[in-house]
Length: 140
Image 1 (cartoon, helix red, strand yellow):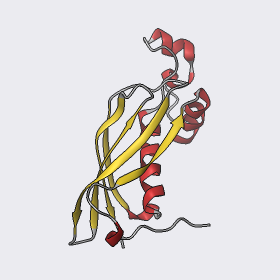
Image 2 (spheres, helix red, strand yellow):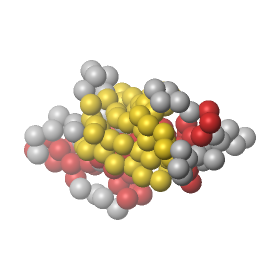
Image 3 (cartoon, one colour):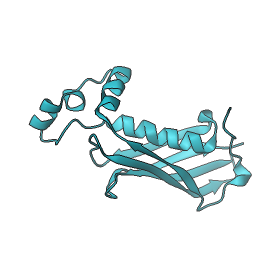
Image 4 (tube, helix red, strand yellow):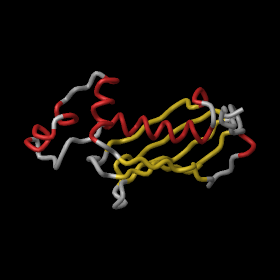
């Protein structure tokens, strides 16, 4: 069953994006490496990651950004309505970390029916792993 497509008139400044929670597993990194072609060993080989100073393999930054995008598109109901997404990768995610992807409506632009979202991701300790992030969606 398709998701309900969010309408511009239904959104107000201050509304929260429905959060998405994901617990990262090493297999996520292996699958993402195959999908992206990024086989940097810090993402797939625990021994190499430890030699590089990490406690274990680390998630690809773009994997986390993709989950942030999923969070937004699940909320708006139509992936084609996401027009822009930017963020800074600020912290590592290792197997066992639970990351919550969240956002809030910062502004609405009636011309073009654009909604500007402040978005972020943080781990179970409240450490932001994605921040200074913003998304623009165009809603019907």
